Image (cartoon, rainbow, N blue to C red):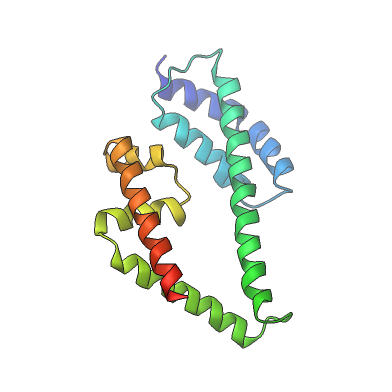
Length: 165
């Protein structure tokens, strides 16, 4: 039995159980279905050896990590939203909405200044939430090359944002 057949049979048999597990961790979130599918998509593109013995542990390990990633991204986003909405005042006025819009425009202007190959990697990392290894796999490029270009993009963005603000 190859990996795809093994994953397919496991998905068919345990999907509802995994969905319940994820829903309980996300507070009944509508994102549970997407996260469960993402788990199996990651396993399908994984180059790790998967057996009937290792599959259940692997599924729950990937699931727990994706749940942690979800909460980490959400808390970071909430921190920035809190900062943006409360930096101008205690209410969500038009001024704070405009300042958030201005910040987005500055980010886009900064992105326009960096080379295209660095820009693409930076967008995948920051906006897509992808890790360097995932980006290198998706783009079919070496890990170190992607890591270097991401570092270059970060450095340029920091430099631009320091002078733009």
